[in-house]
View 1 (cartoon, rainbow, N blue to C red):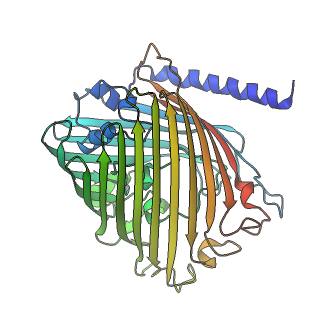
View 2 (view 1 turned 90 degrees about the vertical axis):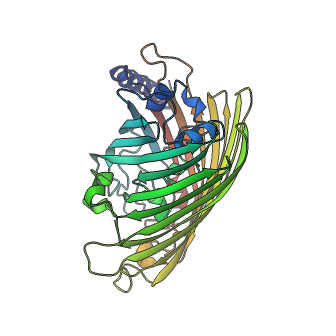
Length: 450
């Protein structure tokens, strides 16, 4: 028996063991929204968390469709294994990543929310991250409030094509968005927690900042989405929105920081095209020093296409997003953290998915980050953040129905990420003689929803 065969059998046995162990303790739990509406998850999602037209309307109307649940709880957990091509500093032989090629329990999330009244609802997620790290070598578990969105809405017209106005209170810029081009809900929908170099320097809107957002939105003519939101530090009576977030990860904003969104959709429940724009201006302050806040101005363009065949056998979806960021470094310059008083950063992502019978899926994506050179900020040999790469993912949803929980969902995924450039170079990008392709990763995971 070959070594490869032995490893494959061990991996399969481990995955089966994990499935058994994780499924039985959660036998009485169902996904909240499916239980509330009496619909299966495919009514709202193509590949979770990507929304169908019906799923977008469910979110727009404040998670209020259906009957209120007495105990609105659901559970999610992810088990995975990531393998990076080379996990060592080639100049010294020292390890750079721990837990490479190990099966790990990534995270456990508890969900609550759903319908509160006919005009109010919520999506609340608490997550225990089992692999919190700052150096990729040492890990600890930590729990905190995750994506949260509370809404108050008013609907006009018929249920098929309603006009909706609403208010939203949330804790992560773009988590309130209904399109999967927004950073909070964009592909990849799950990524490695260990031995993972990331996909380049993020813009402010891509950082998942735990802040307090209070916004108003309208959905008009079954096609036009408009939103205006103000972000501020989650403190005082808004402090629960960052509950559990470590002090060194908390984001402090100066005053009210505007965010705006416009998107227009043409099509119907089977085929639709959306184009849009979003933007934000955020003054981010370092609370440990008495200096002015750094200012980030993010402007984004996005587009989304979806096709859902009438017989529900074929689904095609594609998304593309471009964000242009201009930053004024009022804290880091001239204090040593930045080489220049201003900088530009550009982030581009695109992906296309094909799903057959809600069982087999394939997704291909590309990403690219470019920006001004800043040796103090990036620390790479070129001083630039320029990173390009691609992602290929295969998915499988078993058709079984567990007798103890007919709405339980399991997704298996194999995800390959390849880099053609990393932090400005394809060779020796950080002085450790590592090539960009040394960061290539093969990631497998099992995603359970109960």
